[in-house]
Image 1 (tube, rainbow, N blue to C red):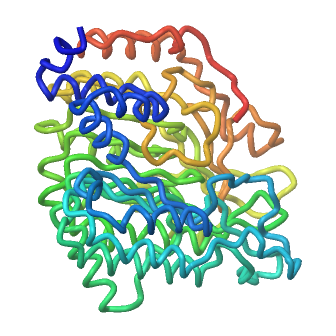
Image 2: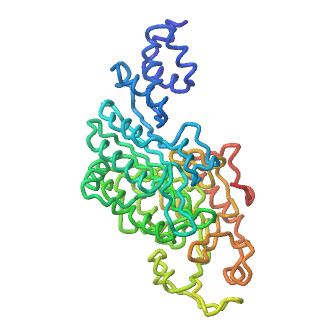
Length: 454
């Protein structure tokens, strides 16, 4: 029987072994020579590197021989420990809090070994997901993930990536904060590393105000607006997959205007927490009709109303809204009169556009990635399809996204109730799935307005 199994095509055996866990692969290595070689290749296909001393020592031992380096296809550089806990209080000002501080030297030493893996396809860099500054506008300089640390690690990552002989065709950066590269030499190396990429995944960590639910709006604005020129433009000729995800809603504000950029080979697009507020945004997706086959929308709302508190706020919104008609309203309890924008498109309009305007579309997901939202970098296939209630939201500047049925007094009343079009949305979504031949899994739910806690 074993002889018959080992006689199967190598490609098929690789597919079978890719489904096994690490324990099974290690056991399989001891069965016969064929499985030893195949299981070894699968075991070392992906390396997860962590900055603790024990992890670094294991990595050094791996590099001492050349037996497995040709098997490595994917490397993940994690700047935080394998046992990282988002509730562990890493941002304590206590001088003794550096016990959880990942060593930047260890991380940079690991990155310097990129040139030892000649067959790399995918490289990922994962920063710690949270990024704070205190209420006195002082950016945290305490360990482990302050702005200086992130910039230094990103610089080392870019330098080693650009000099790597393998030149991977897939790149992912999780919890990216320092999108603006100041050093011209680093910028040139980044451009070199991005050119020729087939897949780019970026997850944005916005600067949060410690002890509050808000964000540093100006930092987020600068972060998002630099994405196109710094990260996206060099990939235009070759990119086939793009993920843009943020830990706060973006699109309207911080604004992201992609209308001036087009990816001629884009086959797959994943957006996370991207807020739609104008037809130009969905039209940009439709503009890739000749190539787009997969579309993923994770926690992406349509904003049916937008209110601006002053002219300065409006200048920071998506530019398409500035030429639209704004109604001037008075709000009880507020001095002055305020501009109100109403967007009339609904999800059933979008679904119809996708059905009629994307003839090559084969897979579509809209809903939410449930559970742990700390690491969403490569989980677009984990989106639970659903027509969640907060697929429609409102925006009351400068940085407040919320559902229209939240308690907001006269502001909520002026912005209107949540659109009552669930049946229309469901019908249009089902028509889209029928058109592309996609069947829903048991966990996918579109029959009700879902309310979930995340």
